[in-house]
Amino acid sequence: MSAILLHPDDNVLVLSAPVHAGQAVTIDGQAVTVISDVAVGHKLARHALAVGDKVLKYGAPIGSITAPVAAGGHVHLHNMRSDYIASHTRQATGAKGS
Amino acid sequence: MTMSHALSGYLRADGRKGIRNVVAVAYLVECAHHVARAIVTRSDDTEVHLIGFPGCYPNAYALKVMQAITTHPNVGGVLLVSLGCESFNREQLRATIEASGRPVETLVIQENGGTASTIAKGLEAVARLRTVAGQTPRAPMAISELVIGTICGGSDGTSGITANPAVGRVFDRLGAAGAACVFEETGELVGCETIMASRAITPELGLELERSVQKAEAYYTVMGYGSFAPGNAEGGLTTQEEKSMGAYSKSGSAPIVGILKPGDLPPSGGLYLLDVVPDGEVRFGFPNISDNAEIVELIACGAHITLFTTGRGSVVGSAISPVIKICANPETYRKLSGDMDVDAGRIMEGRGTLDEVGAEIHDLVLAVAGGQRTVSEALGHQEFILTYKAFDPIGPACLPLRRAS
Image 1 (cartoon, rainbow over the protein chains, first blue to last red):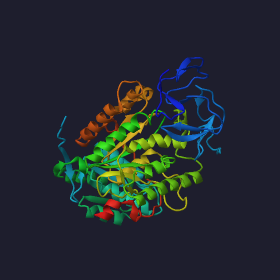
Image 2: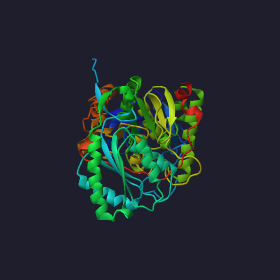
Image 3: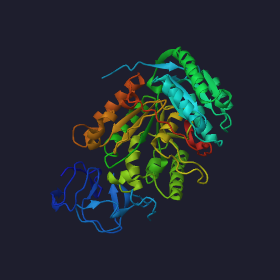
Image 4: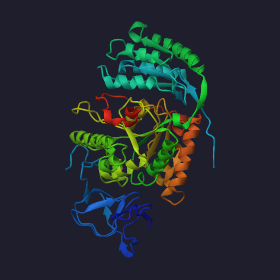
């Protein structure tokens, strides 16, 4: 796996190459099986994350976890949210999230 | 390596120096857009650019930005195209351009026989303006006389790792050489306000920096959307503050010396934040409806060149001032290499470092300032958009250096 740890305090890694479901990867010396296809620029959990945990990237909080994430899990709109302003997708445009 | 970057600028009568010598054709209401566009198209001259404002109702911000753009040092002459009955204060705009020492002509369609006749007269006017602009003297120009803007568009998870911090290095270097460097979009700094405030040269300016971001957050909350597009999420960004942290890295690490609003000129070199979010109640919609509205505001603050970082892959350029496009994502670069000036995505693949890409952008800035065409210029991109906004003047704490001098 090709991924970047931007800051030592971070609990997510940024992919510099895509990963695929079922791919065996190593994160911090631990063997982990990737659950889903994840593209370049997306984030994987460095370790298991619980609801309410702050997601740390660049050493700074970038939002909060809303559903449990396993180590190596894709961290994105389905399991985290902004602490400021809701994000939206093309499908959700017109329907405001919270 | 020491290099002497002997730039040669177009010396304007007001003493400012440009890196291009454009004749701007400006429509003052949408009703005059077709005529102005036809004049530009039929001129068939890469140095004749179309700008304008579509609204019929008056707006102080639009007048200020049009005054700033038409007296930008890259502009050598201006043709104003008015329908005749719109509210835009064409007399005041013309007076401002005349006072700057530039040639200016006005064509009012209702007084010039309509579309065909005004286009024909416009072509003659552009030829005259080009002749006068062509006589502009050249003068040596220092890096400290440059104003450089930066913007990100189509950001993704790579932007904040490659292109944006590379631009941050360029800003540090150009700012240290005395250039004015301007970053912007307070809506894309939500979550970074405290970190950013700690870089202000005075505590009062730090407070103003925090306030500008709080204003943006409140404004975007009313609008219902942050400055966050679906493509950002598809590219791996999840939240506004995550996008903000990546965008913030364009500002580099220098102290922040001031806050500008659209149309304000930086009074000295150094790093400035451009506050683009309107003041007061939410009135005219989204602060900037797309990237080019932000680029226009940077140019209104004097930007000679805009450094545009993109992950998903923007293709735009701009009227008046060249845009250098820096592609953050290596996959995007492979798809859109014909639209990009710099491949910063190579950092993702270990084919380059932030320092190397920063040095490449720095050298390209000087080459473009010396006349080299950017990719978007060569492709004919001359986007321009200006819409309604309302601003209060900047407060006394926003420019501590000017206050001290």
